[in-house]
Amino acid sequence: MKALFFLLLFINLAFALYIQLEPDESSRASLSAELQTKTGPSSAAAPPPPSVCLEWEAFPQPDVAHVEAAISRHNLEGKLKSRTMGMAPYYWVHIPPLMNKQHAERKIGELKRRDITTYQIVEGDSKWNNAISLGFFEKIEDARAFLATLRTKRVVSAIIGARNVEQVKFVAENSPPDLEGQLEKLKAEFPNSRITRTTCEPRAETHGKANSAAQ
Image (tube, rainbow, N blue to C red; front, side):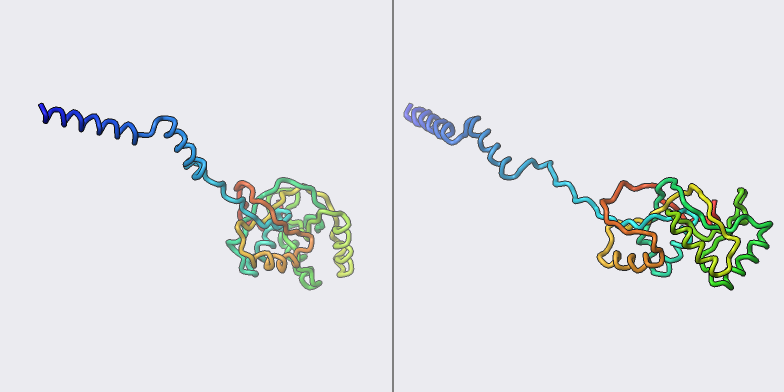
C-alpha cells in the first residue's frame, strides 16, 4: 500500500509539472507570429534587378552588312545582337537599274575611281535588280546633302527615291563597362545612328546576317 501511495503521488507531481511547462495555444500563436515578423515568409524572394541594355540604332536592313563588317573590324562580334524593329520610310540615294550585272559592276569601278566607298548592287527578282544603292537616310536634308557630295565627284546618274525598308538595331545585354566607349568609336563611322541605355526588353527575333542585296 505504501509503495502504491508513493507511485500515485509521483504520477500526480509529474502531470502537474507537465501542465506548467507545456505552452497553451495562445502562446504558440504569439511565438509563431513573432518569428514570422523577424524572418518574413520563407517563400518570398526579392525580385532580381532589371538588366540594363545598350541599344545602337537604327539601320535600314540593306545597310546591315556594312554595319556588321564594322562591328567585326572593332572585334565586337558576339557582344551585339541584331533585332528587327519594323518597317520605316527612308530616302534612298541610288543609281537606277542598269541593263545587266556587267554594266552594274562597270559602274562600281567608276565609283571606286571617284572615291565613293559606300555602294551595293541590288540583286534579285525585283524592279530594283542591278540598281546601285548608295545610302539610306531618315531625313530628306541628309539625302540631298549626300547627293550634292556625289555631284562634286561627278556622279551625275544618282537620284533620290522613297522606300519603306526594315529597320534593325543592335543590342548589348549586360554590357561590360568599356563597351559603351567602344560603341561610341564605332558610332563615329555612322553619324546618323544613336546609342541609348535602356531596360532590356523581352528577347525578340534575332536578325541574321544581312543579304548583300537590297530588297
